[in-house]
Structure formats: structure tokens, C-alpha cells
Amino acid sequence: MTSYPKVAKIRQSFDRPQVTAIEQVVSEELDKEAIKCQIKPGASIAITAGSRGIANIALIIKEVIRQLKEKGANPFIVPAMGSHGGATAEGQVKVLNSLGITEEYSGAPIKSSMQTVQIGTTEEDLPVYMDKNAYEADGVIVMGRIKPHTDFRAIIESGICKMASIGLGKHDQALALHTLGIHGIRDVMPKAAKVIFDSGKVLFGIGIVENAYDETAIIEAIPTKNIFEREAELLQQASQFMPSLPVKNCDILFVDEIGKNFSGTGMDTNIIGRIRISGVREPENPQIKYIIVGDVSAPSHGNALGIGLADLTTERLLNKINFQAMNENVITSTFLARASIPIVLKNDKGALEAAMRGNWGVDGQDTRFVRIPNTLEISTLYVSETVFEEIKDDNSIEVLEPPRDIIFDDKGNFPNF
Image (cartoon, rainbow, N blue to C red; front, side, top):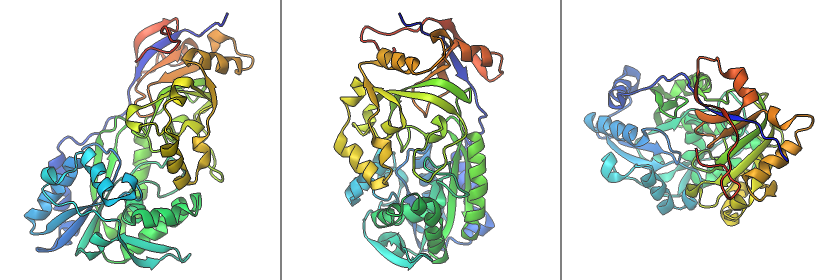
């Protein structure tokens, strides 16, 4: 008979810098001398809007639009999201609408097109494209969330530069960069962004950084000439704000759900310590022997991209996979291993037992086990008694339930958090 570890339910807290007066901060940022001098009365100005669920993004865009109008400009929104939304103009508007970014709410038109204009080339002769509507405007404001990328480590990762290149370049730029694999999005992407910035079309950037609770921590308007330097600095701050598991090593990590609504890779690679891309070094921490994924979220509509980052999964997840959606996504990215199907077990109980059997030389009750709802929400989690004894006296840890026996429902699955 399998001997399971006892588990405690805990809540871990993280530093929580937060912008609460969104409108006031946006107003102050756009009133900075180096920024407001770029806003000319009567100018048509395109504002980029991406496909990620960024906290307060609709409100931030709305306030930027209000400030631009107040200064006499004529703002409009352009979807800046590579191939998302099915790589169609209509699909990209729907993505924005799903994020609360509508013409009615923002107070400005959304001009969506997949047409681009080639405005130059990188030193490798890679074509650099810009959304046609943005190119024909008098100026562009590039807005993006600055955060660690899920595919690589570099000075510039996810942020304004990525929005300027892959976002504003639409499907054309996404294909051109992704065709080069990791070299394209890590090394060439910033060079494509530089061509965009050097074109004179970008008035300034707006960088957004979130805290560990996915709340707005920083909103900053950045002069175009300073974007590279300042984005690198803000990336370091974003990395410090990132949440993490309470321990750096465990035997088994159980993730209740993977999904595109949690991370573009289904599971945030920064949380699980796995990237699995040829030519990219794996993170030093956390060190996890086995990762189990139990289910795929409903908003993912069967796109289980990221399942290949796990070692074991369940029949209920397998039965929900939309292979067409997942395969199209992973083939576009070229990181094929992330859609590989791991060992499939009947239920959570079977998957846990299989992982424990492969955990050589460790008694069941001594298993270093952590269970999280998903990689976006890791403040509340279950930890095995071995882990609990190690962290229980940490000031950032609140004990919600002391160690008790593991419970499965009548189908052999964990009950919901």
C-alpha cells in the first residue's frame, strides 16, 4: 500500500508595490517634459495594444487616450500581437475586446489590419515590418508589459522592444523572427526593434511592470532614445517582483491546471524551472524531479501547449486536448517539445503514485511534494510535511491548515483548492 506524505495548506506572501491611482500616474507620466513635447496638436497617434491579459490595461489605454485628446492629438488603437487572433484583423479586434479594450470604453477607434510596410532590414538582412495603419500615422506610442520571457534569458526579454518588433510587425514579423528559432526572438528581435525606433515613427514607449500578484506596480513613459537602457533596468525590477515556489528543490510538483490564460507556454517556465528549448540553458532553480499536470483550463479551449514541460499527466487532460489548436501554436513557435505528450495515468492518484515510485530511495511520507492551482496563482498551495517543517517559521508563510492526510475524491483526483 502506498504511503503518501501528509500535506499542509499554506499561503505565502510577496512584496507588493502597487499603483492604485492609475489615471493620476498616467497623467503625470505623459506630462513629463521629454514626453509631452512629442505630442503635437492635430497629430494622429497610434497606440499599441497586445494580446496578453495585463492588469488594468484597458484603463491605462483609456487614460492615455484621454490625455492625448486633451493635448489636441487624434489617437487610435492598433492591435500589436503578431499572429494571435487567428492572424486576422477581425480576430485581433476580438482579442482586444475580450480584454476590455473596446472603442466604446477607450474613446478611440481600433484600426485593425494585417497589412504591413517594410521599413528596413536588420544587419542580418532580416526584413523589418510595421503595421500599415501605425506607419501611416504621425506617430506611434509603443506600450508593453516588461517581464521575464518564458523562452530565454537576456538583457531585453518581454516588453516594449518585443511589442515594437513582433507586435507592430504583425504576422509577417512573427514568422520572420520565429523562423530563426530562439536566435530570432532572443538576439534578432531587439535589432528589429532598433530599426523601428530609428525610423522616427515611435514618439515614446510606455512600460508596465506587475508585482507578484499580477497587479500594476510601475507605469512609466520612456523617451524613445532611452527605451533599451530603461527596459533592461525595469526587467531587473520585474524579475525581483516575480513570485516563486517556497523551496528551491522538490521531488514532485503537481500543477492542477495548465493553460494559455496562465502563461503563453501553458506553465510559466520561470516558476517551474524548465524551458526545454535546444540551445537554451535550463534555469538553476527550482530543481524539480517530476512535474505532474492534472488538467487544462477551460479558457484554453483544449490548447494544452506546455504539457511537454511535464513528466506525467492524466486521462482527463488528454481527453480535452484540441490537437489542431495546440499543434498550430507549437509549430508556429518552432519549440516542438512543449507539445510532447508525457506519461498518461488514469487520474491524479495514479500520476502521483507513479512519480513517487520513480523517486528513488525516498520513502513516501518523506516526499518533497508541492501542489499549486496553476503557475499564475502560487500564493496559496499545499506542501508536504518535509517541506512544511523547513519553511513554517518563515515570516512570509501563513499556515492555513496543518499537515493532514492527502485526500482524493471518488474519481481519484484532488479536490479543488
